[in-house]
Image (cartoon, rainbow, N blue to C red; front, side, top):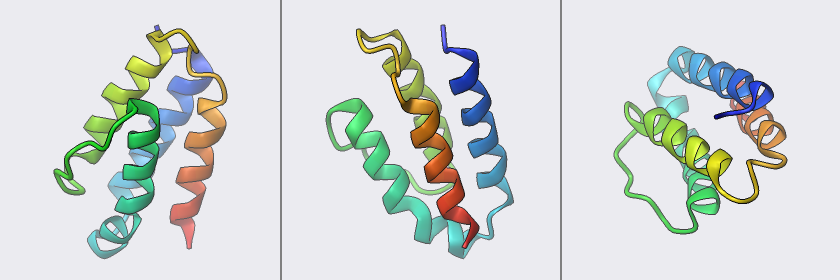
Length: 86
């Protein structure tokens, strides 16, 4: 149900997140939470860096099966991931 380009970019983001040192992951959480809130239409609970990628997977799936079908989501995920490179 997730288009291949979104699934691919989501996988890249999750793999990159797992490689981040904890301090950088914590610093990157606000950006992930902003995307989650935008996609979900509401603020989601902050469950910490260990769980946030599971939250992202669920919200991305929901966005893809919704009416918009995840338009532009692959690009947004890529931009988010690339922001963690600094």
